[in-house]
Image 1: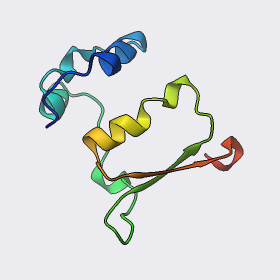
Image 2: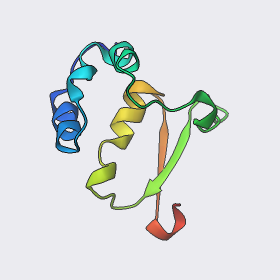
Image 3: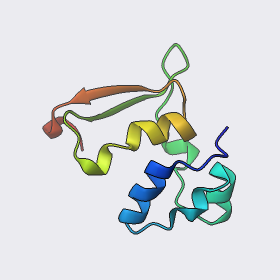
Image 4: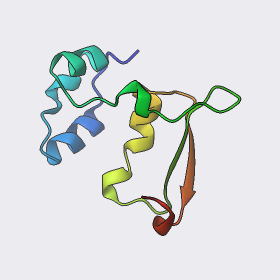
Length: 90
């Protein structure tokens, strides 16, 4: 798990100026290449079922389309996403 290269996400990251080749090898390769990481203390607390809950805006723009996939893939496979109006998200 986490060792496969996702062509779609890699292409998007390259489009955004990130060297996506470090995704080959999954999280370990990303960490070893000093890719940006989320500190464990910044991950939202888990709900009563052990899932993290994330809030993002409804009708996300291009910059947020891959976020739920990335969170479920690398942080919490059971993550829950709540979609609210953009004015409610900081």
